[in-house]
Length: 175
Image (cartoon, rainbow, N blue to C red; front, top):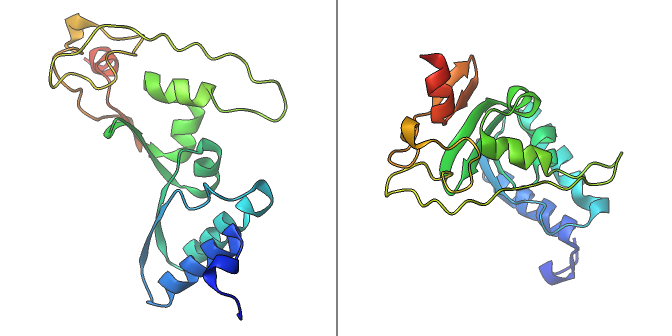
């Protein structure tokens, strides 16, 4: 109470910023990398606070690179690659069965506490897509010119209820 902002810890400052936003009686909070600068001992305090606020009716857009945290806090997830939606839907479905090659690579790269980090092979290809092609084309192990991956962006298709993917590989399987 009697401290200046520069005298607060990272966790205290984050909580203060959330409290300041809530003073305005907001209904929607954009939380962009809200705990990225916090140490491990205080990282869980902020998501727990957000979860509590969510139960009170606050809608939260939670932006993070931390997949474990995204799973912990989110009901719905959107996986982006270079600003384009690769996969979207229920967090449970996306994390249990990632469909897009990029999402699969991300999930494979998440470190686990119960075993050593296995090497994740990411094959970088040097096949440039034409303007308007799939943004993941150069890295995709499923990329196929016959499907049009190099020429146009795939549409976001609902593969099952509340689980959509933007990949021509799934377009071909569905037809």
